[in-house]
Image 1 (tube, one colour):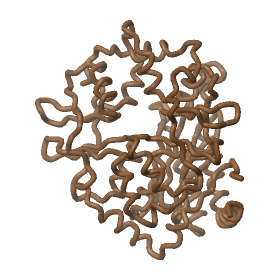
Image 2 (cartoon, helix red, strand yellow; image 1 turned 180 degrees about the vertical axis):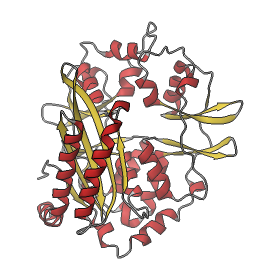
Image 3 (cartoon, helix red, strand yellow; image 1 turned 60 degrees about the horizontal axis):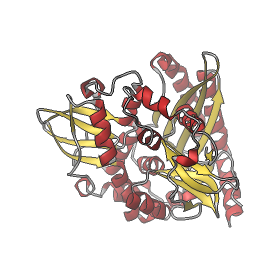
Image 4 (cartoon, one colour; image 1 turned 120 degrees about the horizontal axis):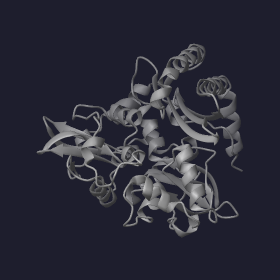
Length: 399
């Protein structure tokens, strides 16, 4: 029986490789030119936000290149638009353009994967001079798993996120929207009374299905969805799931062929986890050669940047201890905010640590940002110390 718990997972194929450089060379040996898209949407700096949303809906892109007189000037992202709740949908997109790293033919796949992880984006432009000549799409990047035997035979349970949040079929749309905002989710599985997956609901479905002519801002779009309708009335009911003991290549096939970014993971009919393109991307990124630990902390507000120094101090202390046991490769942390007592902010912080070909995932909730991060880092440290015995016990349970 699958056990829901704070996850310690072992990617056995990565552990068994005598030289991680062999795997890295296989991944980076794949030509960037062979997987970039040469047909892609663009918008201009004078386009309206409403026009950009229409382009995103039609193309499936969430990061679109912005051009001015044919020259590339930056990217506009779906998440940036959603954050501008008070901006008119008739406003020009020029105020939302952000500088974004670009890729080149000479880059390795592992480096590009790390760029996507660190910038939390789904598309990256390939720029030649001042022109966008191609775009790397996240779902094309994860296809490399199909060509690397050591990666494609990894099991879904080894990289999925667990435990997983879900909404009930009879929950109100308010409940789903609150969960998305609080936990910074874009997609959530919908389950019935038996915890069987019956659908998927995402922020895109909420906005697309609640667009009204009188909406003038993104905030209006969200308010129009906050009604007494149930999740069932808006969810995509043809949800595709993946079994927890399937090979990761099967999951990637489903994602790529159906253009899914998220797959609910099941044991039998019951929801036991969730797997996303981001999980696969982190796995590829973790194979990159580095002289030091790659750390990414996302979700911090501008007035919380002063917390970075003590958080990094805790990370350095952790690394000093666990480096005696394993070599850490990458650590990503994401901070989500929500209010439960007036203006006091509560934090939900998730982390994924790759060590020696093993991914460790944990989560912590608390009222104080620095203390909550410190507690989470301590949890990761304890998990690393106990990792070897825990992995053996877990695998025996699966046989």
